[in-house]
Image (cartoon, rainbow, N blue to C red; front, side, top):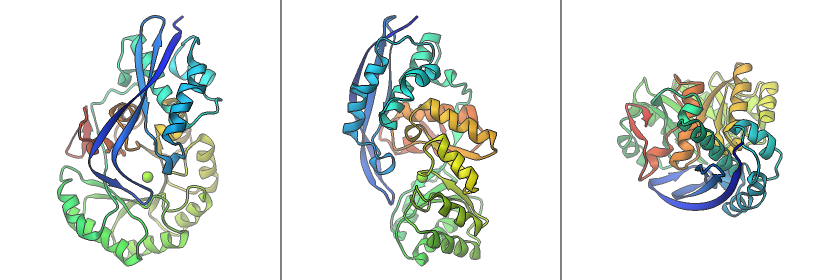
Length: 341
Ligand SMILES: [Mg+2]
């Protein structure tokens, strides 16, 4: 059987075409951490991750340390029988950051693909070449919104980032977005935990009064406050999505038991790999919970893995796969509201 005999870490910098700002952070350039593995049969593949300390709590230093010590030790000399079984056997119970495990798991799926002579997409059962996606409208002043939308004319599904502002300003931004994008555009609102329960309810009531037709409100309040999401949901007909509140299967079960949300946003890095992300999706499907697949601001390999999961698990949905649009250089292209490769 194939054994992993060597692993190492490299880095690459990816400049963004414009600054990506949310209530949690602002990013101009990504540092992609690449985790390479080599087998005794000569296969050489890599997975990758990025630090998003404001979301996962995982810093670049800790990720690199985990990859070079705990996770490298778990891999070297172990027989490879396939990515998901290897993950559960050797990685799942290791004390290491999810961001680091995610890079390892992507590398394991790349290895499975290489051994089978397939692509990562094929090994994840993705047969589509394009997928509908939203595009982020970053946290900005209202005056900037017309130009931001002018730069995004190929899209009709928008995810607008909101932060700390008066209710009047928040609503004015959505009204302007609705006005410019038209009645048929989809508008998703993501305050990235910046609001209170009361502010969220007030916002949704005001948006309803003006018929702004918000598709969903994503993670308006603190990640730990799952019962608060349930209170917001009980006060509005607008759908509520969890993002930072869902990292694990246990989080999903807690959200389900509280009847807290209508949808969950699944991302490989915050789940700790492709395998646990697929486990959450499987559980969400079993309980009839809607989901979308998203990414962090990350590199093409991570986006490819998310694309493959979205395309295999829910090809006819508008996912959250705009990260490559922000990259100065990417193998993905965007047109007519779709991401393709
Ligand atoms: Mg989000």
